[in-house]
Amino acid sequence: MRVTRPTLAPIGAALLALALAGCGSGEAKDAVPETATGSLEHLAAEVKCTPNMQTDADEIRQAVCKNPDGKFILATFSTDRGQREWINGAKDYGGHYLVGRKWVAVGETSTVTALRGTLGGDIEEGTDHSAHESGEPSDGATHSAH
Image (cartoon, rainbow, N blue to C red):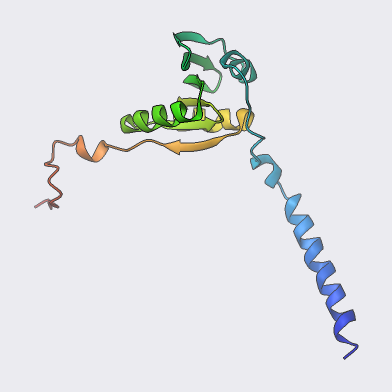
């Protein structure tokens, strides 16, 4: 059937046109840049903050930063393993984490989201313990209001 091939060509062209139109429909504004790398000072400069150093050790460097997006903690690590161990321990306290290669920024959701627009990275969330702060027993039983 010779008709099949010419019929598929316009369909393929239409699909390609739709795909290209979708790429230019404003999705670029939500694009996350390539994840930044570098020293704590370099990352801080990227997000326009002057780091207030809290910890300056071989395995971790940690500073408090503040810029127009908000206040946050910026930390860099000497190893990937050290970074993951720190994040896993910190997540028990809740919070929002922007994670890059050997660095992390910790702050409010809006701050971390804004930083991601400059630094890239992945957002991770800490454990939410608010259900346990109500004074209710945490024995797993459900209680209903009367």
